[in-house]
Amino acid sequence: MSKNGSTTKTSAPCETCPAHNVGNLKKLGINMDDWDYVVALAGNPNTGKSTIFNALTGLHQHTGNWPGKTVTRAEGGFEYGGSRYKIVDLPGTYSLLSTSLDEEVARDFILFGQPDVTVIVTDATRLERNLNLVLQVLEITNRAVVALNLIDEARRHNLTVDERRLARDLGVPVVPTAARSHEGIPELLQAIHEVATGKVVGKPHRIQNEPPALKKAIQQLVAEIEQAFPGLPNARWVALRLLDGDRRIIEAVKRGELGDLSIGSTERVNSIDMPLEVA
Ligand SMILES: Nc1nc2c(ncn2[C@@H]2O[C@H](COP(=O)(O)OP(=O)(O)OP(=O)(O)O)[C@@H](O)[C@H]2O)c(=O)[nH]1
Ligand SMILES: [Mg+2]
Image (cartoon, rainbow, N blue to C red; front, side, top):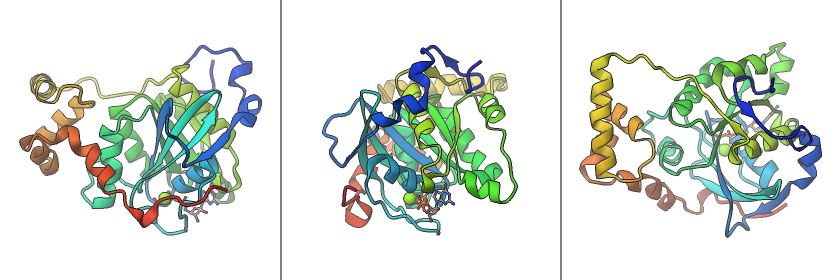
């Protein structure tokens, strides 16, 4: 039985030991011309995404104890277990259905940036609220890891989270972390590596029993969307949003812009919050 509940693990025990591999972390700062995998850091505002980003890259993204510090996406790199990773720090978002500009940057990248692994950083002291976004992200990808961050704060408030049970229920790895003191970072790195390389395959629970009429409508729309936008990931998600009347997605389809949504957020990257120094 793996620590990741219902996930499947096939590697030898020694390779999966975080202590064995942590010395392999090489912080690459902004030097990442080529990479093997892209990792997105998603999560509600103020959950410690930029703190994790800094711990992994050696960069100095702005952090602070108020929501909304990161307003554009920032990129950095690290090397681990023989692979080069590009990691993207995103603005906080409560929902993939959000409409504010900051939140759009995050949403567009998660949906259309095609990250190899999405790390969903949660606040262990406010888990219930944070699970909304976790469940939405797990609707669109099984290549995810949940970081149960601020676990030190949770302990301080005498809150305990059964991370094994949570991993089993969600169907993806869950790693407790206290990013500010680097607690759990080796385990998080290992989980990212295992998902990126396919050693661990997530099996999120998804709603299966849609009413027949909805199922048919989704099938029809997915076929049309895939024809209009070949290679688009998450055509099913787009179909659901269209059926839901999501104005931005309707506009994007009408204008033939769907495939460009992730490019749009790249263009929004400006100098406001870009990483500057390597530690
Ligand atoms: N006690 C404790 N504090 C943490 C931890 N991780 C981050 N922090 C603090 O929490 C605050 C928010 O951290 P950030 O990394 O800026 O959070 P963020 O998710 O990037 O925030 P946004 O960009 O606004 O979405 C900062 O004051 C961090 O020092 C942790 O594990 N434990
Ligand atoms: Mg941030």
